[in-house]
Length: 277
Figure: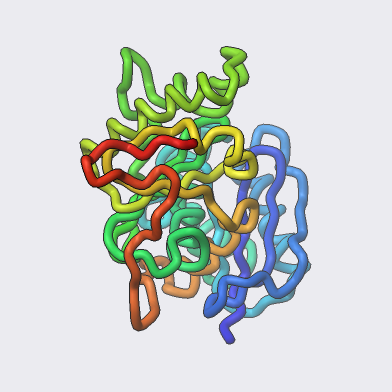
Protein backbone atom coordinates (compact mmCIF):
# COMPACT_ATOMS: atom_id res chain seq x y z
CA UNK A 1 0.00 0.00 0.00
CA UNK A 2 1.23 3.46 -0.90
CA UNK A 3 -0.19 6.30 1.25
CA UNK A 4 0.06 9.70 -0.44
CA UNK A 5 -1.46 12.92 0.87
CA UNK A 6 -3.82 14.60 -1.59
CA UNK A 7 -4.99 18.20 -1.08
CA UNK A 8 -7.77 19.87 -3.05
CA UNK A 9 -7.84 23.68 -3.18
CA UNK A 10 -11.41 24.88 -3.67
CA UNK A 11 -13.12 28.23 -3.71
CA UNK A 12 -14.63 27.84 -0.25
CA UNK A 13 -12.51 25.14 1.35
CA UNK A 14 -9.14 23.39 1.15
CA UNK A 15 -9.46 19.73 2.04
CA UNK A 16 -7.10 16.81 2.19
CA UNK A 17 -6.67 13.17 3.15
CA UNK A 18 -4.09 10.42 2.72
CA UNK A 19 -4.93 8.13 -0.19
CA UNK A 20 -4.12 4.51 -0.90
CA UNK A 21 -3.05 5.04 -4.51
CA UNK A 22 -3.36 1.32 -5.31
CA UNK A 23 -7.10 1.33 -4.57
CA UNK A 24 -8.10 5.00 -4.68
CA UNK A 25 -9.53 4.82 -1.16
CA UNK A 26 -9.11 7.53 1.46
CA UNK A 27 -7.25 6.19 4.48
CA UNK A 28 -8.61 8.79 6.90
CA UNK A 29 -11.54 11.18 7.00
CA UNK A 30 -11.09 14.34 4.99
CA UNK A 31 -9.93 17.38 6.92
CA UNK A 32 -11.22 20.72 5.64
CA UNK A 33 -10.04 24.26 6.33
CA UNK A 34 -11.85 27.31 4.87
CA UNK A 35 -10.07 28.90 1.95
CA UNK A 36 -8.54 32.23 3.06
CA UNK A 37 -10.37 35.23 1.68
CA UNK A 38 -8.81 36.29 -1.60
CA UNK A 39 -6.80 33.05 -1.81
CA UNK A 40 -3.40 34.77 -1.86
CA UNK A 41 -0.53 32.29 -2.35
CA UNK A 42 1.02 33.01 1.06
CA UNK A 43 -2.27 32.41 2.86
CA UNK A 44 -3.05 29.24 0.90
CA UNK A 45 0.51 28.03 1.51
CA UNK A 46 -0.08 28.22 5.25
CA UNK A 47 -3.26 26.15 4.98
CA UNK A 48 -1.51 23.48 2.89
CA UNK A 49 1.27 23.33 5.48
CA UNK A 50 -1.31 22.99 8.25
CA UNK A 51 -2.97 20.07 6.46
CA UNK A 52 0.40 18.39 6.01
CA UNK A 53 1.07 18.73 9.74
CA UNK A 54 -2.42 17.47 10.59
CA UNK A 55 -1.91 14.18 8.76
CA UNK A 56 1.81 13.87 9.42
CA UNK A 57 2.41 11.98 6.18
CA UNK A 58 6.08 11.70 5.28
CA UNK A 59 6.47 11.71 1.51
CA UNK A 60 5.27 13.47 -1.63
CA UNK A 61 2.10 15.55 -1.55
CA UNK A 62 -0.28 16.23 -4.43
CA UNK A 63 -2.19 19.52 -4.57
CA UNK A 64 -4.92 20.60 -6.99
CA UNK A 65 -5.21 24.16 -8.26
CA UNK A 66 -8.22 25.85 -9.93
CA UNK A 67 -6.27 27.05 -12.95
CA UNK A 68 -3.63 26.14 -15.50
CA UNK A 69 -0.61 24.30 -14.10
CA UNK A 70 2.46 23.75 -16.26
CA UNK A 71 5.63 22.17 -14.88
CA UNK A 72 4.71 23.23 -11.36
CA UNK A 73 3.92 26.83 -12.26
CA UNK A 74 0.43 28.29 -12.00
CA UNK A 75 -0.34 30.23 -15.16
CA UNK A 76 -3.89 31.48 -14.63
CA UNK A 77 -5.94 32.81 -11.72
CA UNK A 78 -9.60 33.14 -12.63
CA UNK A 79 -11.00 32.76 -9.11
CA UNK A 80 -7.91 33.30 -6.93
CA UNK A 81 -5.42 36.12 -6.33
CA UNK A 82 -3.55 37.29 -9.43
CA UNK A 83 -0.25 36.70 -7.60
CA UNK A 84 -0.59 33.04 -8.65
CA UNK A 85 0.10 33.89 -12.28
CA UNK A 86 3.60 32.70 -13.18
CA UNK A 87 4.29 31.45 -9.65
CA UNK A 88 6.47 28.37 -9.03
CA UNK A 89 3.82 26.89 -6.75
CA UNK A 90 5.54 23.51 -6.50
CA UNK A 91 8.54 25.25 -4.91
CA UNK A 92 6.35 27.42 -2.66
CA UNK A 93 4.50 24.45 -1.18
CA UNK A 94 7.58 22.23 -1.06
CA UNK A 95 9.36 24.80 1.08
CA UNK A 96 6.30 25.27 3.31
CA UNK A 97 5.72 21.56 3.98
CA UNK A 98 9.23 20.15 3.84
CA UNK A 99 7.95 17.51 1.42
CA UNK A 100 8.03 17.26 -2.38
CA UNK A 101 4.80 18.86 -3.59
CA UNK A 102 3.35 18.46 -7.08
CA UNK A 103 0.49 20.60 -8.38
CA UNK A 104 -2.14 19.58 -10.90
CA UNK A 105 -5.17 21.37 -12.36
CA UNK A 106 -8.27 20.48 -10.33
CA UNK A 107 -10.29 19.13 -13.27
CA UNK A 108 -7.30 17.09 -14.46
CA UNK A 109 -7.00 15.57 -10.99
CA UNK A 110 -10.68 14.64 -10.93
CA UNK A 111 -10.34 13.18 -14.42
CA UNK A 112 -7.40 10.98 -13.50
CA UNK A 113 -9.23 9.66 -10.45
CA UNK A 114 -12.44 8.95 -12.35
CA UNK A 115 -10.57 7.26 -15.20
CA UNK A 116 -8.70 4.85 -12.93
CA UNK A 117 -10.95 4.33 -9.92
CA UNK A 118 -14.34 5.80 -10.80
CA UNK A 119 -16.80 5.76 -13.68
CA UNK A 120 -14.06 5.21 -16.27
CA UNK A 121 -12.24 2.35 -14.52
CA UNK A 122 -11.12 -0.23 -17.07
CA UNK A 123 -12.30 1.81 -20.07
CA UNK A 124 -9.82 1.97 -22.93
CA UNK A 125 -9.70 4.65 -25.61
CA UNK A 126 -10.56 8.32 -25.17
CA UNK A 127 -12.35 9.45 -22.01
CA UNK A 128 -13.46 13.05 -21.57
CA UNK A 129 -14.29 14.09 -18.02
CA UNK A 130 -16.26 17.33 -17.62
CA UNK A 131 -17.09 19.03 -14.33
CA UNK A 132 -20.11 21.32 -14.37
CA UNK A 133 -20.17 23.95 -11.64
CA UNK A 134 -19.27 27.64 -11.58
CA UNK A 135 -17.59 26.94 -14.91
CA UNK A 136 -16.85 23.80 -16.91
CA UNK A 137 -13.64 21.95 -16.15
CA UNK A 138 -12.27 19.28 -18.47
CA UNK A 139 -9.83 16.39 -18.46
CA UNK A 140 -8.91 14.53 -21.65
CA UNK A 141 -7.51 11.04 -21.11
CA UNK A 142 -6.42 8.51 -23.73
CA UNK A 143 -5.68 4.96 -22.63
CA UNK A 144 -5.18 6.25 -19.10
CA UNK A 145 -2.74 9.02 -20.06
CA UNK A 146 -3.74 12.61 -19.30
CA UNK A 147 -3.47 15.44 -21.82
CA UNK A 148 -3.21 18.29 -19.26
CA UNK A 149 -4.84 21.73 -19.20
CA UNK A 150 -7.39 21.24 -21.96
CA UNK A 151 -9.67 24.03 -20.61
CA UNK A 152 -12.53 22.97 -22.89
CA UNK A 153 -15.01 25.07 -20.95
CA UNK A 154 -13.52 28.05 -22.79
CA UNK A 155 -14.45 26.77 -26.24
CA UNK A 156 -16.37 29.38 -28.23
CA UNK A 157 -19.94 28.21 -28.73
CA UNK A 158 -22.96 30.19 -29.88
CA UNK A 159 -21.08 33.49 -29.77
CA UNK A 160 -19.91 32.96 -26.18
CA UNK A 161 -17.71 30.76 -24.06
CA UNK A 162 -19.35 27.39 -23.47
CA UNK A 163 -19.13 27.61 -19.69
CA UNK A 164 -20.94 30.95 -19.70
CA UNK A 165 -23.86 29.26 -21.45
CA UNK A 166 -23.91 25.63 -20.29
CA UNK A 167 -22.37 25.53 -16.79
CA UNK A 168 -24.42 24.79 -13.69
CA UNK A 169 -24.08 28.45 -12.71
CA UNK A 170 -25.60 29.39 -16.08
CA UNK A 171 -28.52 27.05 -15.33
CA UNK A 172 -29.16 28.82 -12.04
CA UNK A 173 -28.57 32.30 -13.47
CA UNK A 174 -30.99 31.80 -16.36
CA UNK A 175 -33.51 29.94 -14.17
CA UNK A 176 -33.50 26.87 -16.43
CA UNK A 177 -35.19 23.63 -15.56
CA UNK A 178 -33.14 20.46 -15.99
CA UNK A 179 -34.59 19.68 -19.42
CA UNK A 180 -33.79 23.17 -20.70
CA UNK A 181 -30.28 23.01 -19.32
CA UNK A 182 -29.77 19.52 -20.79
CA UNK A 183 -30.55 20.89 -24.25
CA UNK A 184 -27.66 23.33 -23.90
CA UNK A 185 -25.37 20.61 -22.56
CA UNK A 186 -26.31 18.32 -25.45
CA UNK A 187 -25.28 21.01 -27.94
CA UNK A 188 -21.97 21.43 -26.14
CA UNK A 189 -21.26 17.70 -25.91
CA UNK A 190 -22.14 17.14 -29.57
CA UNK A 191 -19.58 19.82 -30.45
CA UNK A 192 -16.97 17.98 -28.37
CA UNK A 193 -17.91 14.74 -30.13
CA UNK A 194 -17.04 16.32 -33.45
CA UNK A 195 -13.67 17.51 -32.12
CA UNK A 196 -12.51 14.51 -30.07
CA UNK A 197 -14.78 11.49 -30.75
CA UNK A 198 -14.56 10.31 -27.14
CA UNK A 199 -15.57 6.77 -26.30
CA UNK A 200 -16.93 7.96 -22.98
CA UNK A 201 -18.09 11.21 -21.39
CA UNK A 202 -17.97 11.34 -17.58
CA UNK A 203 -20.01 14.19 -16.13
CA UNK A 204 -18.84 15.44 -12.74
CA UNK A 205 -19.33 18.44 -10.51
CA UNK A 206 -22.34 19.01 -8.32
CA UNK A 207 -24.74 17.96 -11.10
CA UNK A 208 -23.43 14.39 -10.95
CA UNK A 209 -25.42 13.89 -7.74
CA UNK A 210 -28.63 14.69 -9.63
CA UNK A 211 -28.09 12.64 -12.79
CA UNK A 212 -31.64 11.29 -12.61
CA UNK A 213 -32.90 14.80 -13.35
CA UNK A 214 -30.91 15.43 -16.55
CA UNK A 215 -29.27 12.30 -17.96
CA UNK A 216 -32.33 11.09 -19.84
CA UNK A 217 -32.50 14.40 -21.73
CA UNK A 218 -28.92 14.33 -23.06
CA UNK A 219 -28.72 13.48 -26.77
CA UNK A 220 -25.44 12.27 -28.24
CA UNK A 221 -24.46 11.03 -31.68
CA UNK A 222 -22.00 8.24 -30.90
CA UNK A 223 -20.47 8.52 -27.42
CA UNK A 224 -21.50 6.92 -24.15
CA UNK A 225 -22.24 9.13 -21.14
CA UNK A 226 -22.18 8.34 -17.41
CA UNK A 227 -22.18 10.46 -14.23
CA UNK A 228 -19.04 10.62 -12.13
CA UNK A 229 -18.76 8.31 -9.13
CA UNK A 230 -16.09 9.75 -6.84
CA UNK A 231 -17.79 13.10 -6.24
CA UNK A 232 -15.98 15.29 -3.66
CA UNK A 233 -13.12 12.81 -3.24
CA UNK A 234 -12.01 12.88 -6.89
CA UNK A 235 -9.66 15.88 -6.60
CA UNK A 236 -7.92 14.52 -3.52
CA UNK A 237 -7.44 11.11 -5.14
CA UNK A 238 -6.18 12.53 -8.43
CA UNK A 239 -3.74 14.84 -6.66
CA UNK A 240 -2.30 11.89 -4.75
CA UNK A 241 -1.97 9.92 -8.01
CA UNK A 242 0.01 12.77 -9.55
CA UNK A 243 2.30 13.06 -6.52
CA UNK A 244 3.00 9.34 -6.57
CA UNK A 245 4.30 9.69 -10.11
CA UNK A 246 6.53 12.60 -9.14
CA UNK A 247 4.54 15.13 -11.15
CA UNK A 248 4.36 13.09 -14.36
CA UNK A 249 0.96 12.15 -15.73
CA UNK A 250 0.39 8.60 -14.48
CA UNK A 251 -0.61 5.84 -16.82
CA UNK A 252 -3.59 3.66 -16.11
CA UNK A 253 -2.68 0.39 -14.48
CA UNK A 254 -4.33 -3.00 -14.81
CA UNK A 255 -3.92 -5.99 -17.04
CA UNK A 256 -7.13 -5.62 -18.98
CA UNK A 257 -9.30 -2.83 -20.27
CA UNK A 258 -12.89 -2.96 -21.32
CA UNK A 259 -14.99 -0.94 -23.68
CA UNK A 260 -17.58 1.46 -22.29
CA UNK A 261 -20.68 -0.35 -21.09
CA UNK A 262 -23.99 0.57 -22.61
CA UNK A 263 -25.92 3.40 -21.03
CA UNK A 264 -29.23 4.97 -21.82
CA UNK A 265 -27.36 7.59 -23.81
CA UNK A 266 -25.28 5.08 -25.79
CA UNK A 267 -25.50 5.37 -29.60
CA UNK A 268 -28.04 3.36 -31.51
CA UNK A 269 -26.93 1.24 -34.49
CA UNK A 270 -28.16 3.94 -36.85
CA UNK A 271 -25.73 6.41 -35.26
CA UNK A 272 -28.35 8.48 -33.48
CA UNK A 273 -28.18 9.16 -29.79
CA UNK A 274 -30.40 6.86 -27.81
CA UNK A 275 -33.49 8.44 -26.40
CA UNK A 276 -34.73 7.88 -22.91
CA UNK A 277 -37.99 6.23 -22.22
